[in-house]
Length: 388
Ligand code: HEC
Ligand code: HEC
Ligand code: HEC
Ligand code: HEC
Ligand code: HEC
Ligand code: HEC
Ligand code: HEC
Ligand code: HEC
Ligand code: HEC
Image (cartoon, rainbow, N blue to C red):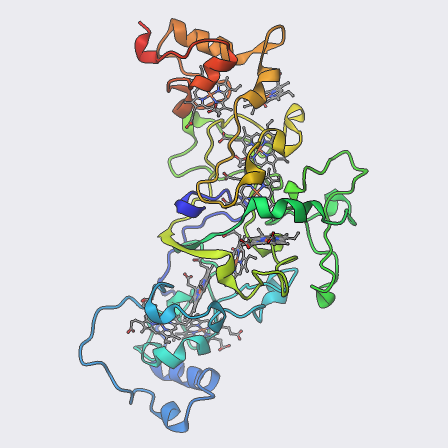
């Protein structure tokens, strides 16, 4: 996520809906002025309302693209909640809990952008938020617009959360009733009393499923088939739904605790969203061992037996699953059981072009086996180039 790494957001799949496309019939400037003057300029003076074009114009006009909003523009670097309100007015329609589910309102912009709001029949600035530009149509893009570059990365220290998450009270609702969207739990208290109690609904302890340090609060199983990468799946190998764990795609994983008292609180967007070089989020997963399936019965274990370093991670920057091959050895490279690694290493000995395919697709499988693989096979590392 940070450093522009694709996030595995399979529940939040990518669309290619372009922005700035005006689909409505030509709207008449007069009508826009009429609606906007009534709706958003109610606090403006009468004179301004009657003649909004009578503002001072800059002497020179630079070509500024008012269809693309940047948080790094100096005047836009105000406290986040000058524009973003929590919750937004539409939250009951959009979420199960008071969420930020919409764009800022007009009054967050008009004080500075009166001119752009009244420019031409279909002002480009409307397309920052609206999918249709018309004085009567309030249709807006999804917030956040999947077709637009992301401007922030998430701050989440796994280390600081280990203890607090282990303290989470036990389940009140059975696992199967838990809603999978962004995270593997829902709020149990009615929306009206939220967030006073903020209880959790994780899986019940008597269920066959076990609780693994409550990682599952944020990392559930994939709810639907993962999205193929732009160039298609490598080797046409299509991983199934049981393969991946998902990552949070929204606030349900955080606001239960970070609502109004535990910093960063919900209106402090910048406490969790850190400015980043704009990047295109990629919804398809990337892996070293594409063929490893979390869902296989024998692979279901305490998460930290494989993700050995995660509870020490103080940031998401450069964070990788970090699973050493030694967590596979006992089942996949043991005399008398299976020798998947040793067998493939021997195949490379015989044929320097051999592509390992048991755990990997060919992107990793055709490279030099790393030293770690030779170590568990009890051998000295060699390079393919040294094999004739
Ligand atoms: C001047 C008004 C304004 C301020 C101040 C502002 N935002 Fe925004 N923000 C917007 C608008 C408009 C959009 C929608 C633009 C878009 O789709 O890229 C948006 C979109 C977002 C998004 C979703 C898009 C993305 O890049 O992921 C996040 C997250 C966000 N803002 C966080 C913040 C944070 C954090 C701060 C404070 C550091 C902040 N905003 C301050 C106006 C503002
Ligand atoms: C405090 C004044 C202020 C506020 C509030 C403000 N802007 Fe701006 N905005 C500016 C300035 C200054 C620029 C630089 C270009 C210019 O002079 O018009 C700018 C530039 C832009 C641009 C061009 C691209 C960019 O980001 O540089 C867009 C689009 C834009 N604003 C949209 C918005 C929207 C939408 C809102 C409300 C959510 C908003 N602005 C709120 C002052 C403001
Ligand atoms: C920063 C995002 C943003 C921009 C830019 C923006 N709108 Fe909106 N617009 C909204 C939101 C949010 C609402 C819903 C307000 C509410 O529910 O209270 C809305 C509502 C509307 C409505 C419904 C009436 C109302 O005010 O509730 C119309 C019509 C409308 N906008 C037209 C426009 C036009 C025309 C432009 C360009 C001149 C524009 N908007 C620019 C965010 C935006
Ligand atoms: C409160 C939510 C939360 C909890 C609990 C949590 N994580 Fe995470 N985890 C995150 C977020 C947010 C990310 C960043 C996701 C992204 O890249 O967009 C992440 C990233 C990861 C990654 C890297 C994923 C990748 O794509 O490379 C792994 C692995 C991981 N977590 C494992 C765990 C394990 C194991 C536990 C339990 C010990 C755990 N997490 C507990 C929120 C959580
Ligand atoms: C038997 C070992 C093993 C166990 C147990 C395990 N994982 Fe993983 N996990 C992996 C491997 C291997 C990868 C893929 C690493 C790669 O190839 O880049 C991975 C990747 C991930 C990712 C990144 C997304 C993905 O699926 O590629 C997340 C998030 C994650 N694991 C979370 C968890 C959580 C939460 C648990 C416990 C419920 C867990 N893992 C248990 C081995 C394991
Ligand atoms: C079970 C409650 C709980 C959940 C869920 C939770 N947090 Fe926290 N978070 C805390 C507590 C408690 C602290 C303070 C920990 C400390 O200072 O040792 C904290 C601290 C933080 C901090 C500040 C760390 C610092 O350096 O001071 C950030 C950032 C943060 N959380 C982000 C998140 C994000 C993002 C999510 C959702 C993916 C999330 N948290 C989910 C309880 C939670
Ligand atoms: C406690 C941490 C935290 C705070 C505070 C927070 N966010 Fe987020 N936000 C997250 C996490 C984690 C995600 C999911 C990861 C991602 O997709 O970037 C997210 C996702 C989003 C999304 C995408 C949601 C979706 O359904 O597509 C938007 C938009 C957003 N945040 C805007 C904001 C705005 C605006 C604020 C301030 C009003 C804010 N956030 C405050 C942690 C936080
Ligand atoms: C507790 C034992 C155990 C551990 C630990 C284990 N596996 Fe497996 N794995 C199995 C079994 C049993 C099979 C099924 C073998 C068969 O029938 O061919 C399997 C199958 C697989 C398959 C074939 C795809 C599938 O799901 O059928 C891959 C790939 C794989 N494991 C990768 C890994 C990797 C990578 C690790 C370490 C991160 C790992 N396994 C750790 C027991 C384990
Ligand atoms: C039982 C599963 C398994 C088999 C079989 C296997 N690997 Fe791996 N491989 C892993 C795991 C787990 C990792 C990540 C940990 C590591 O680097 O040791 C990995 C890492 C790698 C990497 C490093 C990728 C990177 O970007 O860091 C390469 C290259 C690789 N393997 C090539 C091979 C080759 C070539 C073979 C065949 C001789 C092979 N692997 C056989 C599980 C396997």
